[in-house]
Image (cartoon, rainbow, N blue to C red; front, side):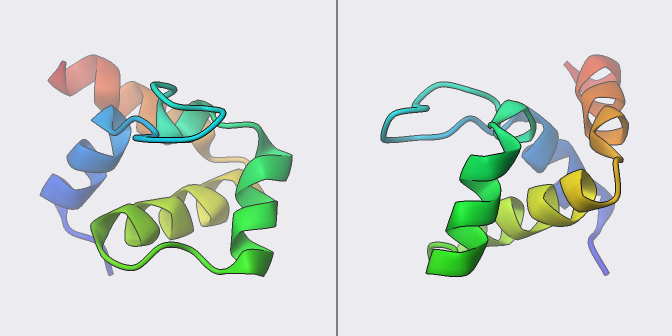
Length: 73
């Protein structure tokens, strides 16, 4: 599915625009990520990362990405 570098990149990625600009993607409010899921994620890498964040939040695995960020920061 996702490769190691993509997970590392996702762990370090911050929202580049909008109300939550500058917040790590994994720390975005769950309802915001769910809203994006229903609206449609942006195209490209940001959209792929948000899709992964959605799946992680859905399954209660946010700490997995936070641990990766701690390990590779």
